[in-house]
Amino acid sequence: MVIAATTPIIPRVIKTSANVKPLFILSSIYSKGLTLKFVASKLEQELNKPYTLANLSNKLRNETITYREMKIIAKIIGCTLELK
Image 1: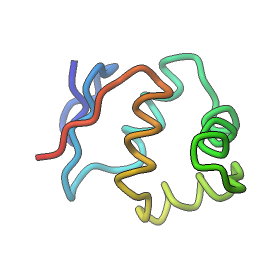
Image 2: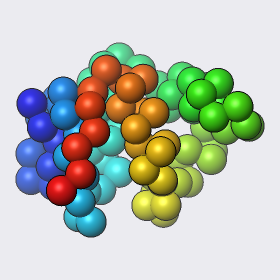
Image 3: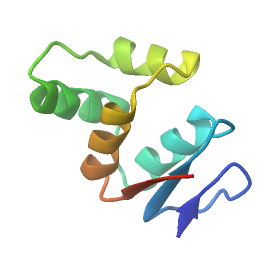
């Protein structure tokens, strides 16, 4: 299954483009039974730097999340990341 701007389905592949909104990332996280706090703590471990729930939430809201962070999130929630 794929996440795209028009496909609100639980993903196995996250396709990103300029029009993907944080709602699709959040729905993917929540559909796996995970929380943003859990994902933020895993990001902190992977990146070896402080990473809080507020930090992750702000990046999603402001659409400033990096490709590297997206790759790690996809790995955490058991998806793959595909850019178009």
